[in-house]
Image (tube, rainbow, N blue to C red; front, side, top):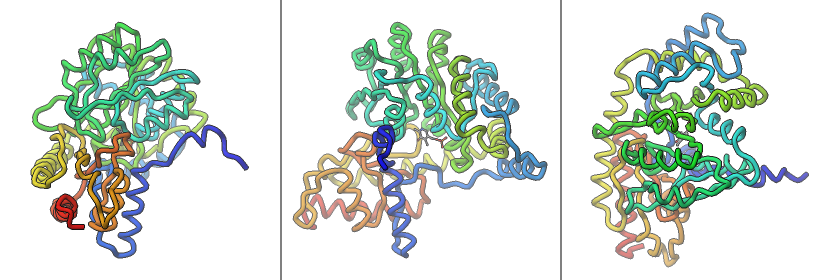
Length: 401
Ligand SMILES: *Cc1c(COP(=O)(O)O)cnc(C)c1O
């Protein structure tokens, strides 16, 4: 039996592969420090769990409308208005099984063979696969660390062709931790509006942001760009609710309607009780999120300081999300037991096997000169993990392996 061409286009998620190997080693009793997590390590706040329990006890356990319940859509509209200065009607909102599912639905209803989707490298692993699954072609714009890992207006403009269907932006960014400023977004907006290019704005790390930086949704920069934007967000990262699978998209009614139809024939509604939990998460103002962000910031500061002391590697100071993207280009020429370390996957494998720390190879994000360190880990693990990393890399740099 041959698989479909579609299935053969996609490769399994490399981030999940390393995390799975680390998990298997742990299960064998090997003490591995995990820096590969793509999710917060905190428990879901109890006020959110309580709302889910209540929904369960009240028997809210049946199908809901496929695109989500009205009450949740209203809560999302209110959030977008109050926090992002964006006005939407509930018919312009879809709730899906995670932001990832929203992205998938969007690509499926917007893209077809021959279409191009512009995105910058490094990119989040699933974007390119989802674009290919929709029959479109990812147009990858290399952005450099020297330029702060940000796409410039001229890079964007040069990439736009008659086949361009979408531009994809993710701020705060996974894997770089970069946050675009209002001014930078304004400059990109000018191009997008001038050329009439639609934009998918993945804002899943909106609230995980540091140093008084402000998250700006590109959609909020005027009616013309709002009309062109499909905004993607969700509760996974902000409220440590990755397993609940609730994400949402906001955009033009015609697009959201098509996404809803598609969803009605595939997954149907996202889990009923998770939707109720999401209402509590979004509507009830508590200190839970602030506390998590304070903790993440502490860890970021610690990690960046420790990394600076390790020879042969460097990193930018992340402004959001919970990742540090570590430049390993100098390490890649080094030898381990006589063997040249050829790429980021090789280094990540060695780090896992020899130093017992799990990081994600940059190749997974299209940037082979890097590895991604997630500091969604306890302070104790971070201390120990960085000590191991330092020891391994120091020996590598000194040619002691
Ligand atoms: C985690 C993540 C998502 C997916 O979030 P879910 O809501 O859990 O599906 C989307 N985009 C980026 C950049 C992410 O890191």
